[in-house]
Length: 295
Image 1 (tube, rainbow, N blue to C red):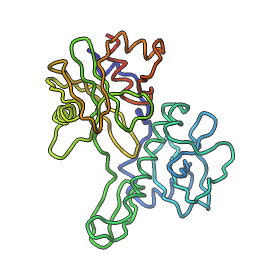
Image 2: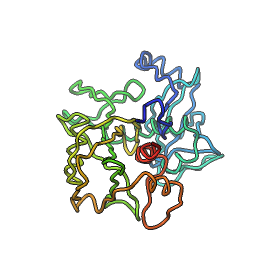
Image 3: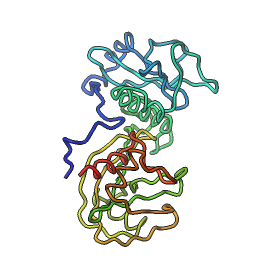
């Protein structure tokens, strides 16, 4: 059995910042931090990346109209993120704006986690500028961890959506599926949002029943991963299938296959290369499959 202690660090995990939740509600304290803070610019959901690092820069007056959020303290250094407006990519010296999935392969783990936090916060604020209770424009508060409606006093907080992602296992094989939206021959673990009134185990069993017609017994939690696309928490699980039979829904899932541990190891090592590929290392699905095949 793989234990939590043996799970390797995954992309977007291990954020080292002190989020200063006990101080960020103080406008004077936040203003003081901004005075000597560094800012990670985003443009069209892309972080600014320098050579091998997230591109934190001093504040620029041209950013004043963009959404700015407090990320936390890196030791004594305040870090923020700012959403830079404009249809044309801003010209900043020393780097370029890079897609988050691409950045996750080249940045250090800590920078990837911080950039993921920044993207999730900025994306939430861009989508939630108006009160869902009364429709009035809301104000950004607490450095970006709350929005307040000045009309009805409703408070709104950045949300994270729980998603179960699970690898069904039967005896010495695991089941991987190809979502109809996947490009090429990618096969992965199964996944779905946790619905209202569900526990994690309930959601795992429902999703596998709906997508693969699979009957499941024991569900075992493995690890979790923040996933800022736009803002989910992936809950990685193993699901013990009760038999070998499955039937894909033909709608969301286009195909599924049982794989042995030996085949998984060979495919991950690129010893087998054909029409089928497995998830990249930034995804928790990669680690679910890889860790299962280690035994």
